[in-house]
Length: 191
Image (cartoon, rainbow, N blue to C red; front, top):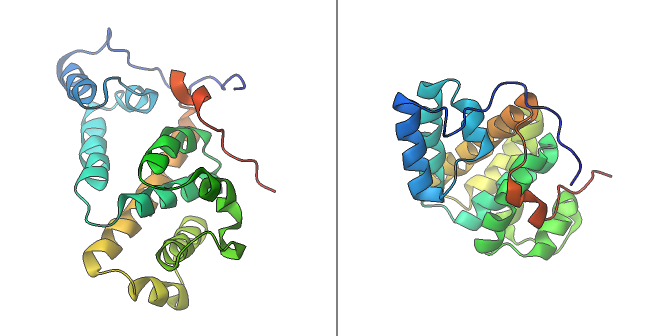
């Protein structure tokens, strides 16, 4: 792994956390056993960190859409936005959600690959357009809408939008990689 660029705001360590940040960190540690760098950066604005966790964790835990589809969309957003942090953070989640390493390796060329099923292709079509253009054409939306119910459409669209934000936060603030990130494949270089 190459040396990361310096973070642009201070990391609020667990030792430096007090009051509301300490309580948030305790909740995070109870759930994920560590406090990721993204959260340490966001802790500079504790109320926003708390809101970030509420929405982000709801997208992971309270959605009715298939987790693998959401993780596939997150991986694609990471590719489009060139966010190695988000890619590496979600690579194992995608694998654990049933997305094969072969699919992740072929993700940049998904539209010409026969590895992806109809639902995955519909999600990736929306992901590409929404992430690149901040909108979705009617043709792409109609394909997507023919597969998913209204709740799933909201969940998937919000997941795509949320991780576009997360990628931009990670990139813009230069969130440092996690210690374990070197154990997962890096973001593939765009061709």
